[in-house]
Image 1 (cartoon, rainbow, N blue to C red):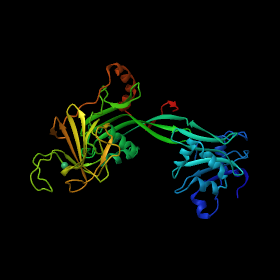
Image 2: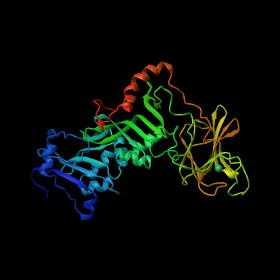
Image 3: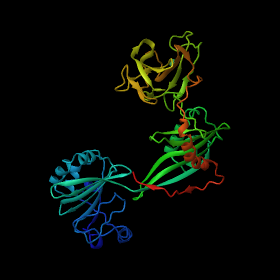
Length: 434
Ligand SMILES: [Zn+2]
């Protein structure tokens, strides 16, 4: 079914053969082969070279092994794949005896690529990407198989872009050449200072420098935002990423104050305020004036609710109008309350410590509620405060002894924000391996 130089090269799409009832092969054209051949060393017959699953399938004509790249389809199992390719099913059983391999093979998802070589159905090698930076390789050993995790070399590129908001942050970031992930990242950096759901205006501007990792096989992984500026209704906010010597990364203002507060302003993402803090509100169900001592956030049932700050769960249960409710004590007399939950997060019990941003429950309409929403309260020494206005405690600043390090590391990143003429892409020389 195949011939000449491409004789032992098969591109195998499991969706296709099932329909055709036969192993369907796609010939790798001579042109692709010649292009790819330059990248490949000719492997000695006994030790096939394993490489990351690249889109171009190729192997030198001299190897006696047949090389196959398989893209996993929906509902595919390795059992079926081995049978369809007429590979020895006992080899698969052998592979599964290696715990790392079994874990990796059991977690295959549609779109994942497995590469393997075989000789007359006897498996010689198999590889699959574990993540952006690691490759699992299995080779036939004296007895059974041996597995290794190889680092996939990558280089770090630095990119930046600028844009102006017309309708939404998403469209502005996309129009400037970024993507939704970058937009979310940008909103995440400034979420303590800017309400991206309700307060972003047309004319708001942003500049963002971020890094991405490009693997040797061309895979791109978007990395962290390194520095960013957001101008919201004329007020400029800046943040720069800094990793402490003990490995903790966070965002800081250029003068070293943490952008993060000790509390999230709001404990749900992307939610609309449906009812504000109001001490003389007419209650929608009770129809009488009853103080609303918190903020309601309309959000679909099941939306995660996060602990606004780190603390200890002091109450978790059902309580009258609140329905399912969690109360967290944060120290210094601050407690927060989360009501009308549809359910609690698993493993969150009274007495447990929770971290800022940790999911403690999910939006619902339990208790006295007309529709799914979160009722959120913020109290200081038992007195209700308006969560939208209360001055939030600051997160810990950078210790003085690290300030020199902070300044020297962040200066070049902050300079990115001030560069007068932005080139679309600037490639940094840095390279690394994880
Ligand atoms: Zn409420």
